[in-house]
Length: 146
Ligand code: SF4
Image (tube, rainbow, N blue to C red; front, side, top):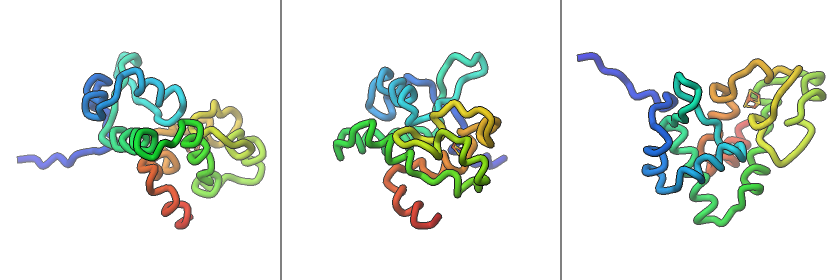
């Protein structure tokens, strides 16, 4: 029998299922997306939101940071905005100067509408910067490795 390995990044769960798995409302999941804490995949009709196992893990960490550690959403966004994406994807000096994520604080790099820079043509859901920081508890450990 074929052994299909589980792809953690494949969007498979509709929003109702993700909401049940996480024990948080659909409204809250939409809010995480609106705030730029998560990039949600869309189904083939481009309407339905779909979530992967990695998305569920990411939102578990965000949920716990908010409900157990009492972080606010702006503080999580600020923490994520400090990830030095320019080092991870190795932007040139010129690209850095044109990048809103490099020049400001408070919003994760993937939440900007990038134009005229290296990230304009990238899909952030596939990016190392976005994916390496799926677990918000690992941020400090990962920063030490950069
Ligand atoms: S491609 Fe997206 S996630 Fe990656 S560094 Fe650029 S803005 Fe950030």
